[in-house]
Length: 304
Ligand SMILES: *[C@@H]1O[C@H](CO)[C@@H](O)[C@H](O)[C@H]1NC(C)=O
Ligand SMILES: *[C@@H]1O[C@H](CO)[C@@H](O)[C@H](O)[C@H]1NC(C)=O
Ligand SMILES: *[C@@H]1O[C@H](CO)[C@@H](O)[C@H](O)[C@H]1NC(C)=O
Image (cartoon, rainbow, N blue to C red; front, side, top):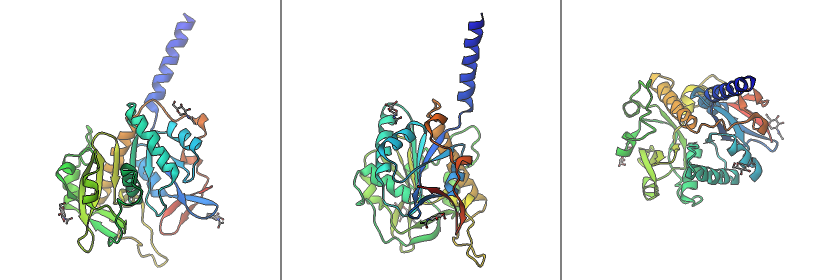
């Protein structure tokens, strides 16, 4: 009797834990100075807005640490910035595609430079997929959807509570913020097996670049624009003038939220309560002892 009761209580505890589990996404931090790495706070807040928690994958994480972090997370996030594709990202990508092959829907998202890292990883080609010389810094754009884009998972978030027509919203409103000089020409990506170009855009000189893609079956997503900036970046210079022309209007905020919630739902599909406190993989919320600096953006800074 007592034993039966104990087993029943344990079952309840396990079920409750699974219900309450919030997915964890590893964010690769970038070199900051010789002693620190950093992650703009906007990415962490954007993941939290979508229903995920964030942890950090150090840029130079060794093989064992990469494996521990992948084992304890549900998604991987590549941020924007300027770092070259590190070995940690290559190794994580290979572990994750193996997990996906074994049926675990572990998801990856890349934004801006992270989008470019992801295109380098999927082509296994290093840098040739990238083209330099785009004039698309500080540029707000409406998206030019492909047929695949109109029909994509990314831009048709399906939920009982989705109220936004994202394809319509992003076709009609000039709200995606671009900050890049490198980019991916549609021709270079068209032949990459398994990938769908979802939208393209032109830079100020009419040069076309891929602005969003997804894998046909794997949960891999990339946006050349920055959906996290609309909700979480307001940086001004010392004279109080915004450093970037990021929009904060209704359409801008809604696209930021819908894309963040889309990724939050993707990582929630992994299930299995992969994150374990004993692993030492720390959630950035609270555990971050780094400084939040104000240059033009808020940053979390981590001692290497
Ligand atoms: C790197 O930046 C951090 C955060 O601002 C600072 O505490 C640290 O002293 C810096 N390190 C060097 C070598 O400048
Ligand atoms: C990660 O998980 C795999 C599969 O369960 C296991 O074989 C491996 O030892 C784990 N690695 C680490 C560092 O925890
Ligand atoms: C829209 O996409 C088409 C087909 O990819 C391309 O030819 C055109 O230049 C794009 N227009 C803009 C404004 O991005």
